[in-house]
Image (tube, rainbow, N blue to C red; front, side, top):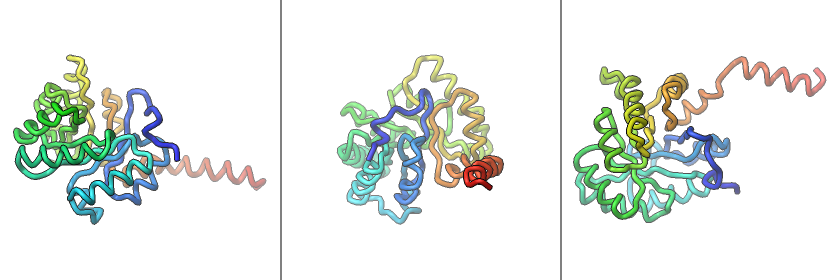
Length: 229
């Protein structure tokens, strides 16, 4: 099988599939437009997978076997020590594992310890540009703001995320702004027009990328012509 990890993603653009459902991975990863997958304990629960080392090791193997270039897996445990313990175990599963830690004091401290050991890091649960800047100062590989949840909380999610990207560009940050909690394909287009280039979203939104009635009508016309009708 050709591995997505052996291919280069589109320059400057990276899509990830936000689900722990291996059946969804089998559907969407072969399309070639997804660089990898992202997970968290809530997604694990939704997929019926326990949040423990054995289950996560099996999921990581399956994602990589299906061609994921990266799999972002969230550490857990409430304290810095437990975050580090679980994060270290996750990172040992594969060089393509990126450990997610929450953008809190405890999570940042754990991420700093893991970074010092060469672990790749995504700071998650980012709700403000200040948190994104802290992730950048740490040297995190990704900072993941939650667009939909920010808007639900009455904040200007689009404006805040555009500011994060602008600030990152202003000081040459290598931290990618990984936009999560997307609700509509239009959200991706709107933010991409603002210079954002990294997005994670679930199977429902993935299907929405291709849900265009005119495209379906065009395909039917092509097939009818090919069949001589």
